[in-house]
Every structure is written in structure tokens, then in C-alpha cells.
Amino acid sequence: MSITLVGPEAEAKLNWLDLTDALAAGHALPRAQVGDTLLQQGGDTLLTRSAWIPGMGVAVKAATIYPDNPKRGIAAVNGAVNLFADQDGRLEALVDFTLVTKWKTAGDSLLAARRLANPDPDHILIVGAGAVARSMVEAYRAAFPRSGFLVWARSPDAARIFADATGATPAPDLQTAVGRASIIATTTMATAPLIQGAWLAPGTHLDLIGAYRPDMREADSACFARARVYVDLRATTLDHIGDLMVPLAEGALTRADVVADFYDLSSGHFARQHPDEITLCKNGGGAHLDLMTARYILRAAQA
Image: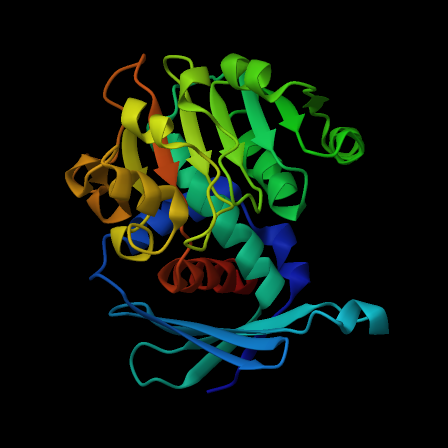
């Protein structure tokens, strides 16, 4: 078996809506086994995330994080996604790490928004102005082409640069922008909540992306108390990310209040129930989504 190399040039063949359909189809297969490992030498890190899905195969996403690399003119994060064949476990492809991460992260949230947001949202608010924020504009535009975009960032200069690059409108006041938005996507590294539940208007869909550690939060507990709560996968979110751990500990949320995850898509439980309800979905990522995304990218590149 020859090994296929898939680099950034494959992006020209990718489509956001096709990816979300592929992610939904992947969750109709048997439940994934996932596992992470973390090794450190001083301030440098090796992170591996692995997933195995019967019928789809195995992916191992390996990344090195060397914080001092930018001083040498080298990217701080480097990696690759190894795809292994389902039938015999042979290495089938190496897929660009950055490409998989970008499309997995934004595709995860876009799949949730296609099921949970009201159709034809007027304004979509992006909180944060980094690389993930830019990919969210790309992804949301594919599904909601008539929507306008607002952007808020702690740095007004960063928000203006983002707006110039994406066509979004800078929002000087976060509370006002939250009240105007039909969809809100948070893409920050916040450790204290930015979004207050009292600000959310009826019918809003809140998409939490940035927090990934127990000490990170982008939304306060009132957001969870007011919303119908969904996650991409219970196993990688409820006990691992501060956004959920804190309201669970405070009693603002119970495990039974988490309505569904992506493995409930086929049953119809992962869906908005009423136009006026507030919906909230936590994007936790996970190696199984890397596997599904890498498979989609490989198929598109080969086609």
C-alpha cells in the first residue's frame, strides 16, 4: 500500500457543508474509542490524540509545541495526522495537521449550528479575532450566506484588523453585540466568563469553542441555566472543561440537563425544539472528530 501525502493544497477541494454531512455520517458508525497522551521536556510538549472507529479506521494526531520556535523563525506548533486503514491497520495517509485542525474545529461548531440555530440568522457575533475566529466566518458563511457578522475582541485593533480581513463589523460593546446576535461563537482563551446569561436574547444559539481546560470558561453559569444544553461528545466535555465543570459543581446544570451529543443526531434529539429557546453547544473537539475530518479530507483530495 502506498502512503498518500495530503498537504494544504487540498483545501481548494473542501466544502464546509459536505464536511458537516461527513461528521454526521461518522456518528452513525459505532462509537469511537479515544485516548490522549502528553509528554513534556521543560517547556516543550508532545501531544498525541488517537481515535479508532470500526468501519473508518484509526487516526493518531501528533503535535509538538515548542514555545521558543518563533524566535528561530519556526512555527511553535508542528504535527501530522496519521491515518491507518480499517481493514488491516496499515498506514494509509499523512494529512496536514493545520488543515485537519482548522476544518475539524470549525466543522464541529457548524454542524451544531445547522441543527440548533434558527434559520436565516440576522447577525452572527464572533468573540475573539484569531485564526479560529476567521475559520468560523468561513464556515458560517457557507450555511448562512445572508447573515451579517459582528466581531468583538479585547483588543480594538485586533477587531479592526479582523473586520478588514473578513468583512465583519467591529462591535465596541460586548453586551450590546450579544443582544443583537442570533448566533454567538466564542473563540478565546478566557479563564473567566465573557458571556453573561442575562444578556442572551430569546432564540439565540451560543457556540462555545475556545475553552479546553478545567480552568477555562467563556460563559457564566447563567448561560447554562437559561439554555437547552448540548455538547459534541459528553465523554470529552463534562468532566474536562471549566465551562461545564463549574455550572455542574454549582448546581446550575445537571448531567441530565445535557440534552444530547452528536451520537444522538440520528435519533433527532440533537435539534432545536422552539424558535424562542436559547440553545448552547460546547465544542470540545476530540480525536474522533480528527479522524472523521481527516477521512473527509483524504476522500476530497483523491477525488
